[in-house]
Amino acid sequence: MSEPVKGKVEWFKDYQFIGRVESDSCSVILGEGGISPMKLLLLSVAGCTAYDVVMILQKMREPVEGLEVEISGERREEHPRIYNKVHLHYRIKGNVNPEKAKRAIELSQDKYCSASAHVKLSGAELTYSFEILPEE
Image 1: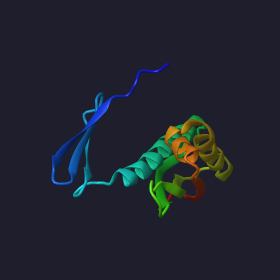
Image 2: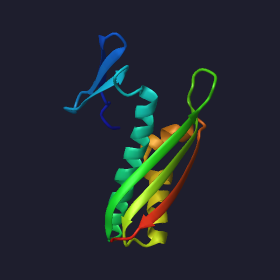
Image 3: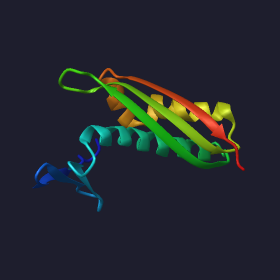
Image 4: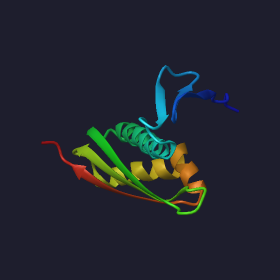
């Protein structure tokens, strides 16, 4: 079993909170003047899968030169206002084989990306698309 992740959120002022994870030096401001927790959740999914896809493509020895992942989400109207639809669009830069790009995304979404798994376990529909932007 892995070690538990520990962090804390402190009320800073008004409706601002500062969050830190114990093992990281990075902090995040939540609420007014910062990012909302639900938007941070979306960015976490995009960051998790982006990391996976780059690593998998590199292991496949594909000439990936860059990656952007756009993410959008729709939330339920009733509380708790969880995401019921999430869409990821991958822009892969480099002369990458489209079949290998598709496989890397599938592996991320079906096996490796824990953040995506959390969203799917909540019942949200998670979809994706991708495009290859060849080297210029």
